[in-house]
Every structure is written in structure tokens, then in C-alpha cells.
Length: 299
Image (tube, rainbow, N blue to C red; front, top):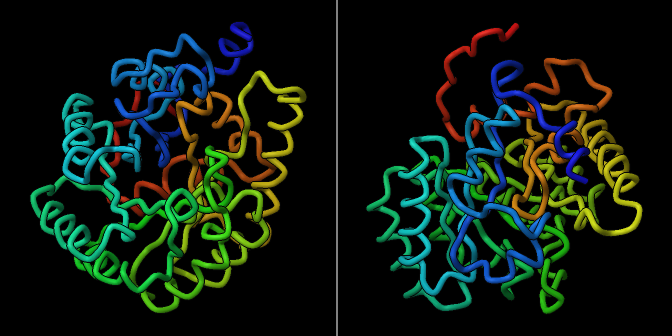
């Protein structure tokens, strides 16, 4: 497996500028040694940045976990990670509407103190609410005011205790219609309901989808076939949507190795400019990220 990882990694000195829109880094991921794509993974800012550099990834969106003790704790950790990354990692916060209106109000007040916030993540499926839950309206109104994308977990959950009935892509349709000027990111393409997820992107101009979380642990049987299948799934979704400008590359690191997640997109049967848009250009526009300086040797 080590040789395969070496072969998949690419130098950070050339090629398109890339953005990974779905990364997780948190002290509250207690199962990292079991669930990470390899047991000896350096699960730290330094380790993540090193893997990003080896794979030509300039920026990453770091999504706070719902396991954080509080919104305040999670946001503080996310912003500390961003500060340590020298501007390469961008923080995304979260809130649980099932904890009540006061929890939501406190989160909104806290986010006002975070000018570096890149987005808001919601975890239906892990938490018992639908994306169209009216308790979330203040969150959506706040995100619209600050021009922040709202990322929504969709599809399968890592935990068997999750309730995927809350996380079907179809459940995003209502709120995407009510908040037409707010941009949503449908995470994981809604896997396993990828056709449904693609329909949500096709139907709603304000909905994007990312390619993260389509792969199981690399130790599972038929993993290489799973990588090929993920590529087929992403290609099929793009065909359904009809264009690639709202498809975003994401890995779900540390669950997926960055090189393998990139391979799913980089080997798509699409024109090179379309693949480059998915790997970075679309995300730079969505999250308002700066254009990185041109690397020596880039064509």
C-alpha cells in the first residue's frame, strides 16, 4: 500500500491549483486510529498540510465536528487550526438546532466574532433534524447576510446510530427553494442517493455538491474497484447536472487519502479545464478564496 500511495502522490510544484472542500481535523475525533485511512496517519495541522502539499492542494476547508463539547469550543479549535496553517486552512463551524433556540442564538452571536469563518456545516442524520427544520431559519438568514455557504451532511453516516432518513438529498429541496440566494453544499453527493443528489444540483442553481466520502477504508475487499466505481458515480452525476461548475472536489480526510480522492476526479473523462474547475476553481469562487501565486513550472 505504501508504494501505491507514493505513485498516487504528485509534486506540489506544478499542475492546477487545488482546493479540498471537505477536511476534518479535531481533538474530538477519538476514533481516528481506527477510522483514518491508515493507523500511523499524522493527524495534525503539520501532517495535513504536508499531505496537501504533496498533492498540490493550496487551500482546504476544515469542517468542525459535531462531537465538540460546545459551539464555542469547536469554533475556537477551528480558528486555531486556521491560524496555525498560515492561511491555507479555512474554518467551518456547526450548530445543533435540536438543542433549542437559545443554542442557535448563542451560536449566531459567537459567529459574529469570527470574521475568518468560511462556512456553516449542518449534520442531519447524525443529529435528528431535517435541513428544512424551521428552527434553522435564523442560521440560514445569518449565512445569507454574511454570504457564507451552508454545507449539509447528506447520505450515509459513519456511525451506525445515525438516522439516514434525515439525510436524504430530497430533504434539501424545500429549504433550497425557500432560500434561493443562499448557497448550499450537498456533501458526499448524497451517497448512496447520488442520483437524487445530482437532481437537487440540477434543479436548484444555488446547490453545489462535493465528491467527498465515497470510499470505504482502504483495507476493505475490492477497494480498487470501489475507486473506479466512485469515479463512475461522479461522472454520472456531472452528466445529470449537465455541467461541472457546481461540483466540488472533497476528500473527507482523514477517512480518505488525498491522493486517492483526487484520482477519482483527475481521471474523469472530461476536458482538462472542467477537471481543474472541480479540483479548485469552483471552490475558490464559492468560498471567495484568493488565487494562489503561479507555481514555477506550471503550464
